[in-house]
View 1: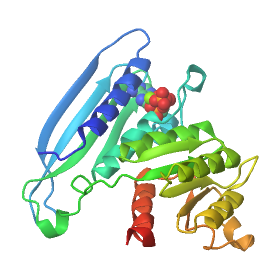
View 2 (view 1 turned 90 degrees about the vertical axis):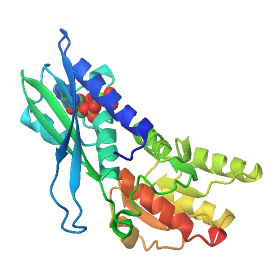
View 3 (view 1 turned 180 degrees about the vertical axis):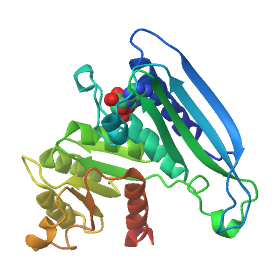
Length: 269
Ligand SMILES: Nc1ncnc2c1ncn2[C@@H]1O[C@H](COP(=O)(O)OP(=O)(O)OP(=O)(O)O)[C@@H](O)[C@H]1O
Ligand SMILES: [Mg+2]
């Protein structure tokens, strides 16, 4: 049996089907295959492992090698002119990572594409080893404010964090973010954590963090930045910012960080 969030799996399959349809402008065939296989014996647990494979296959235009190598990256799209965001496969990849699975992509130009999702299935899960697998973790839902001037990043954060069962509000800049933050405080529904971009045209991430800490010292602030060194150079340290993550963030890591950072928050202790 595969322990999985049905909604997440459905969303992933929908993304694969949309890609297959896009790849067959003249029509074609989409094939779904599921199979259950004997996998390797786990060295850690010694338990027998099976694999569940799900394939979505098309006979469309296929991908060249460069596209195949980059297609899982967030924002990589060869369909930007047609409204492609490049987030479809990034979300599929996030989903498979959360299931400790792997994704394989066979594709060649003119020959079509086969995307294979491989899920590990443990038949005798020893409690000590598998007891905390992501699928059985109780989901803690956080009220999160995400501030970024880039609409695609806002969409990515909103989509992915909602997947993790959080309640997400997005703001398009520092000022907008502070406005939402204050309104939520006044309504007595404060955000439990704030994620902010560093470089924004109106009010930058530091100013956002400083203001939030001045008004609500216990609210954790996570800074997203493409330049990890800037923190040190500017002498800005943990007093305003509780954690720094690279951009774009890896969603399962961000989720772990969110759960950790709010668990150590004194208000929740
Ligand atoms: N079945 C497929 N056949 C050919 N190319 C594909 C296929 N699936 C994905 N690709 C390639 O991988 C890229 C990234 O796919 P992804 O689903 O992440 O984004 P997108 O489809 O471009 O945009 P979005 O899914 O956000 O609308 C696509 O732009 C396309 O070049
Ligand atoms: Mg897509």
